[in-house]
Length: 394
Ligand SMILES: Cc1cc2nc3c(=O)[nH]c(=O)nc-3n(C[C@H](O)[C@H](O)[C@H](O)COP(=O)(O)OP(=O)(O)OC[C@H]3O[C@@H](n4cnc5c(N)ncnc54)[C@H](O)[C@@H]3O)c2cc1C
View 1 (tube, helix red, strand yellow):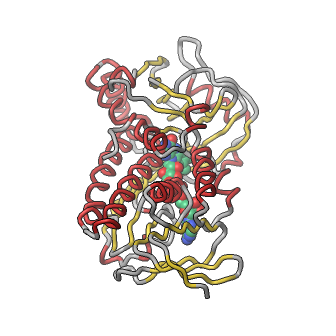
View 2 (cartoon, protein in one colour):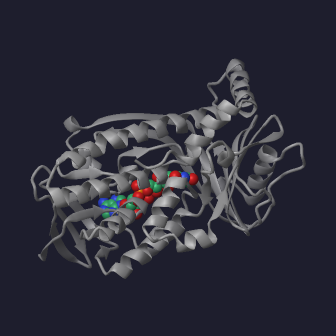
């Protein structure tokens, strides 16, 4: 079995693992990335699309934002629709110019894979039997099989960037981990459609029939979501049924409605809030969805992953030059503070904009009163805006 050495062993080539590898490379720190899916699968996975200002700034500073600046769509506001009316929240005006950028997570991943390959540093796709070992020693190990061969990599640090279903979090003894979670009684049916966006900005809508979100990926592709049951089968939704429901939930009294077109992709996602504390066990550090999950309403998951690896790269760099543990020790507490702020915001957006079967008439009127207050108060809109565009990475 080939035994090699690296400074940082990274499990997972999603946004967190790839960005961490790149930030470490920029500081001259060596890493090995292992990913159990194929390169094509990782690139084709359609997921997030809203980048916070901090994510755009980080990608720009890291030299991986050329295409993002060319093809990404910078938005200075979002729409909130309820009671048949659409209201605008002027994100940039309320936050001294901070904004969001629409750029698919799959495009981010593609750019980061290209950047990784250019560095010549190792990234192994389609690995299996990945395991992390000796985590409480100064030389943790990453073991995996690739192309039928067993590999062992001795590291200074292992980064668990392997998402919610990965193996890193579960390698931590239960006695060292505290888990907080909440499941929601609904999911999202996500649709990618070949139809030009009819709004320049996202529209979040609460309708008597439930939540809907209008978003886009390019001048000819829209991305739309419908609240549905968490165990809904996407195949039960014909194109006609999807468009009838989207049109009913999104159309507003000013005559606005989404354009209808062929549906290219559809799928159902459950909604969950989840935090594992601390984000560290010995020399294993969790980042991104491996440590926390938010319901997608607040568009925070990918951005939290980016904020985590920014902090982790800084901490590893400081440790590698000074051998001091302070920065590594502070990683989890600093990350959890940002995580819990994002949890609160994502829960609040989700509760405000979804219908739950357990809600009674009082809950529905309260929800509408909350939306009415939101769009009528500069203070309330500023609170939403600063959370939505995201506070600067610390
Ligand atoms: C429908 C949907 C919409 C979303 N919208 C938004 C949005 O608008 N904005 C936002 O910020 N977030 C959004 N998110 C959340 C966002 O996609 C995630 O938070 C983000 O992917 C987290 O990145 P990550 O790198 O931590 O994890 P992942 O992207 O899950 O990457 C983990 C990687 O590890 C790999 N892996 C798993 N197990 C192993 C193993 N044993 N060995 C090796 N590799 C392994 C996986 O294959 C994967 O490539 C959305 C999510 C969904 C599902």
